[in-house]
Amino acid sequence: MAAHASQALRYVRSRMAHCTRGPTVEIQSDALIAFDANGEIKEVWRDAKAVDAQMMDVVKAARLDGRYMEGNAGQFLVPGFIDTHIHAPQYSYMGSGLDKPLLQWLDHYTFPAEAAFSDLDIAQEHYQRAVKKGLREGTTTAMYFATIHKEATKVLAHCLLEEGQRGFVGAVSMDVNPGVPHYGQQTEAALNDAEDLIVYLKSKLQQTQKRLMPVLTPRYVPTCSVELLKGLGHLAEKYDVHVQSHISESLDVLEEVDREHGVRDTYLFDDAKLLRPGSIFAHGVHLQEDELCLMAERGSSIAHCPLSNFFFAHGHLDVRRAFEAGVGVGLGSDVAGGYSISMLNAMRSAVLAHKAILIENKTRPDQLPQDNQVTHETGFYMATLGGAAALGLQDKIGSFEVGKRFDAVLVDLETPGNIDPMPTGLGKGRGGDASDAEDFERFINLADGRNIAKVWVDGHLVHAAEGYD
Image (cartoon, rainbow, N blue to C red; front, side, top):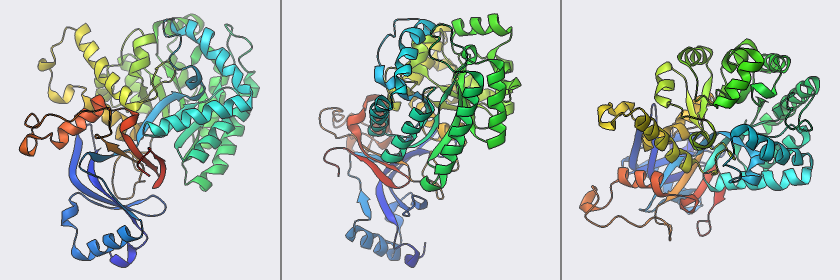
């Protein structure tokens, strides 16, 4: 990189961990990343000590005028986390009612709570809290369900713009809801609102470097008529936008779909042209092999929501089957079916779900090839590069590579009061201290929001914990 072209760049030097292809984590002990004022990564040096003298002079100049940051020994840089499935209004009652079956939970908690978001003041208060909390936990990109209310959904979009988070925003479309009849829409009104929001949000794209994107959001099949599904499929083709919904989530929902339609929900979505590239469907726990193959053929992906699956899905998604079928898999918090907005919790839950499958099948982990295991590295991949690929954004975010956006999290393992240091002599690193790989694994398994020091989206600092300004 020519020195004269580097004057406006910003630089971060730190240990670095990311995935560049599959679920194998690459860790660099001393990396240096350069990005421009628009947040585009211009250069990545995997060994900062190898930077030539001329370039190092440029970096020193950047240090003097505040365009340089260097992590300490307890810190490292990871790509921003990507939450591929979250219900923003449900953040307001997160952690409640998880003792009920799914359909009862929806009728008793979800629909009444979401109905309150017709009040824009309530929407502003709770949406802003959810977005801020996500950023504090390191989530730089999120795929949001809102409610049926068009104007309140615009409020959510403006919260993302204000706080700087990258995201997809969709108003829920649903025209069948006998359990709570006052929370629903007429088919034509639902389609008109969905189209209005696409046009509105697309008008914001150029203002935000495409950080804010629309997504069509049929809630799930029992709440959507075939007419509504097909109308949304037409809009997806007309505007070439993403689609999100729930698929094959729980046995009670599948039974209801079968009673009403006599066919599985995957085929209803496909008939409506909603299985398409850029479509992402939450759960997929009970997908059959032919359905997985169809999703792979259509270019649709799964948002794996392991924590909420423990409560509501009557099973676990076997991500290995999805990977083997060629289906992309991202990771979702599924607030509030999942009681935590933290993607670190989602990563840990993904590993536990895999372990639960092995226990149910009486399979010993040592009988499986290493590349057929779901480990902390797999969870991290699904929350970063895998999530980006599931959303069709793998060329833009998810790893630290030239041409991508600088969406990043600075992790600090030495934040007081959380992760104690490994005793000297126990680790496998130099002198018996923890190795980089051990530090990374301890971060995934032990860290929480207290260890999230700084967060950037598009190169802009959007969160700095107290003491890290």
